[in-house]
Length: 85
Image 1 (cartoon, rainbow, N blue to C red):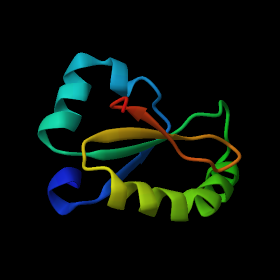
Image 2: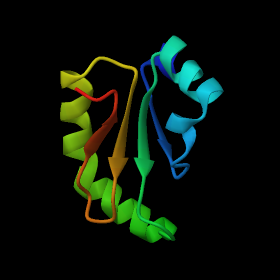
Image 3: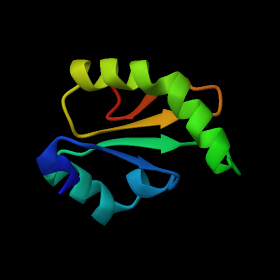
């Protein structure tokens, strides 16, 4: 449903892009996934990182066609992880 609506997936599960079934689901449903990558982030830490990253996330969504996986570390940067360009 996320891909068909054009939404983005926010998750703390860093392993999705390595699980073949989950990666296949990302591909066939054209999902834009953003994953928080700093360990043990509280909800407040995630909210702060998301606030810093939001503009970068929007630019990435306009620039890169789905599917893709990008990381958001605690400092709020956004790094494309998959596919490698």
